[in-house]
Amino acid sequence: MIISLLLAHPGLDLTLRDKAGLTPFAAAMTTKNNKAAQAILNREPNAAEQVVFSGRAIIAPFLSWLEK
Image (cartoon, rainbow, N blue to C red):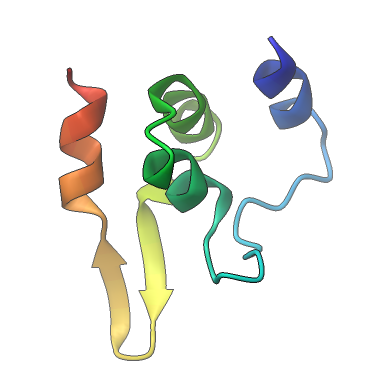
Protein backbone atom coordinates (compact mmCIF):
# COMPACT_ATOMS: atom_id res chain seq x y z
CA MET A 1 0.00 0.00 0.00
CA ILE A 2 2.75 2.48 0.87
CA ILE A 3 4.49 1.67 -2.41
CA SER A 4 1.29 2.42 -4.32
CA LEU A 5 1.00 5.79 -2.60
CA LEU A 6 4.60 6.66 -3.38
CA LEU A 7 4.30 5.56 -7.00
CA ALA A 8 1.14 7.65 -7.41
CA HIS A 9 3.06 10.88 -6.87
CA PRO A 10 3.09 12.71 -10.22
CA GLY A 11 6.58 14.13 -9.71
CA LEU A 12 8.25 10.80 -8.99
CA ASP A 13 11.37 10.18 -11.09
CA LEU A 14 12.20 6.48 -11.22
CA THR A 15 15.46 7.13 -13.05
CA LEU A 16 17.15 8.81 -10.08
CA ARG A 17 19.84 6.82 -8.32
CA ASP A 18 20.78 6.55 -4.67
CA LYS A 19 24.30 6.90 -3.25
CA ALA A 20 25.06 3.32 -4.27
CA GLY A 21 24.00 4.08 -7.84
CA LEU A 22 20.78 2.05 -7.70
CA THR A 23 17.50 3.08 -9.26
CA PRO A 24 14.33 2.34 -7.26
CA PHE A 25 13.76 -0.77 -9.39
CA ALA A 26 17.30 -2.03 -8.85
CA ALA A 27 17.03 -1.34 -5.11
CA ALA A 28 13.78 -3.30 -4.94
CA MET A 29 15.32 -6.22 -6.78
CA THR A 30 18.51 -6.12 -4.69
CA THR A 31 16.42 -6.49 -1.55
CA LYS A 32 14.22 -9.11 -3.27
CA ASN A 33 11.13 -6.94 -2.80
CA ASN A 34 9.21 -8.46 -5.70
CA LYS A 35 5.99 -6.58 -4.97
CA ALA A 36 7.75 -3.23 -5.07
CA ALA A 37 9.64 -4.18 -8.23
CA GLN A 38 6.44 -5.27 -9.96
CA ALA A 39 4.66 -2.08 -8.89
CA ILE A 40 7.51 -0.02 -10.31
CA LEU A 41 7.35 -1.93 -13.60
CA ASN A 42 3.58 -1.45 -13.74
CA ARG A 43 4.10 2.31 -13.53
CA GLU A 44 7.25 2.51 -15.64
CA PRO A 45 7.78 -0.53 -17.91
CA ASN A 46 11.24 0.71 -18.92
CA ALA A 47 12.45 0.66 -15.31
CA ALA A 48 14.12 -2.70 -15.98
CA GLU A 49 16.55 -0.94 -18.29
CA GLN A 50 19.54 0.83 -16.85
CA VAL A 51 21.67 3.27 -18.74
CA VAL A 52 25.30 2.28 -18.57
CA PHE A 53 28.30 4.01 -20.10
CA SER A 54 28.13 1.82 -23.20
CA GLY A 55 24.37 2.08 -23.69
CA ARG A 56 21.48 0.18 -22.12
CA ALA A 57 21.57 -3.01 -20.12
CA ILE A 58 18.41 -5.01 -19.49
CA ILE A 59 18.28 -6.42 -16.00
CA ALA A 60 17.15 -9.84 -17.23
CA PRO A 61 18.29 -11.89 -14.22
CA PHE A 62 16.18 -9.70 -11.95
CA LEU A 63 13.09 -10.11 -14.11
CA SER A 64 13.12 -13.88 -13.62
CA TRP A 65 12.57 -13.31 -9.87
CA LEU A 66 9.28 -11.60 -10.61
CA GLU A 67 7.94 -14.69 -12.31
CA LYS A 68 8.28 -16.75 -9.13
